[in-house]
Structure formats: C-alpha cells, structure tokens
Image (cartoon, rainbow, N blue to C red):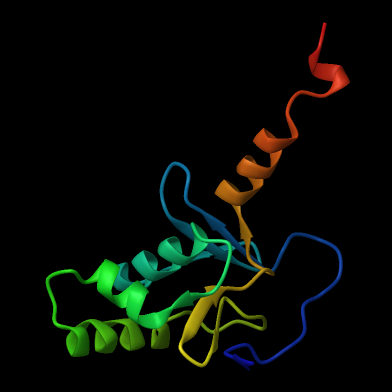
Length: 125
C-alpha cells in the first residue's frame, strides 16, 4: 500500500487530521486549519463522501467532466500532489484505487454514524 505520510499517529488527544464538510470545507492538521487548493478540496471532499476505495478514473471523470480522460487524470494527479504534508496519511493509493485514510476524522461520517445509532435512553422522555 502506498502512502504519503511519513510518521506515526500519536495516541490520545484530538485526531491529527480532521475534515469538516458540514458548513464549509475545513482541513485541520494538529488542530490548525490549513489552506488547501480548490482542486484538492474537491478530491478530498469527493473521497470523504465514499467509505471505500474508488478507481482513480472514476474520481477524475466525475470531478472534471468537461475534460478528456488524459487531462482529467492529470488534474487528479496534480490535486493529490498538492495535499498538505502531514505526519499521517490523508489520502491513500494502491494500484488504480484512491481513498481517504481512516485516520482522518470526517464530520459527516461522524454525524452519519450518530444518526444510524438512533435515539438513546437519555433522548427518550
């Protein structure tokens, strides 16, 4: 498995990488907001909305509909190259697949998990 990270994730404390999609895009690394180019934001958000690896051609084709396959794939490579460098992984690749690392805390995934749990005893009067 290829990875872009170069270190180990620390145990305890806030996740080293978190992603907010609800209310606007915000990528935080070590609890600090980082600037992310718009093309990279699109890729990260696209991957965050999927819970499994996705074919690179599918990602490129969906994000750059107005480009030919060669240009769309080049745009995807460029967007991935522009990912902020971290001690952990943000996006992973293997062969032709690409996905958001499970180590990235994503607000929409957390909200979806809470919604699937349903009400707790504390919520019922």
